[in-house]
Image (cartoon, rainbow, N blue to C red; front, top):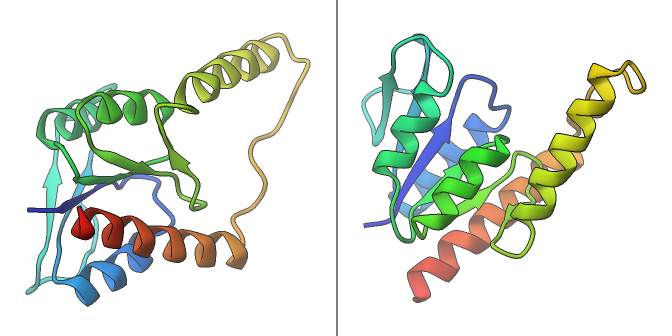
Amino acid sequence: MLHIYIDADACPVKNETYKVAERYGLEVTLVANSYMKYPTGGRIKLVVVDQGLNEADDWITEHAGKDDIVITGDIPLAAHCLDKGARVLGHSGKPFTDDNVAGALATRHLLAELRDQGVMMGGPPPFSKKDRSQFLQKLDQIVNAIKRG
């Protein structure tokens, strides 16, 4: 059955995901390195993994499968989940696919090198209402595409 996994520690679209999941009666698993508040009494659960690099990513990679949906901004996690047949959606509503994940990994590597050399400073632009809207629309589309087969 279709399941949504959220790489939850820094996810800005948890509430949006809950709304879509509720609309379709889907289960959601938040995976994080520490406890966080979440809606209880429904189809949402929290898994708290050990502290450490990639613990949440490893848990999600182990549990996500074909036609599950993974919500993450972590490109290496996205690549692993795509390999398992999961659909992966970034926070701004841009899906990770087999066609674009290698380029995203290369860009991530290049930007990290530029930051390490002091050539480039700062991070991504602020999260906008447009990003939230695009995320909601794309998540809804992905759920419907999976349900149609």
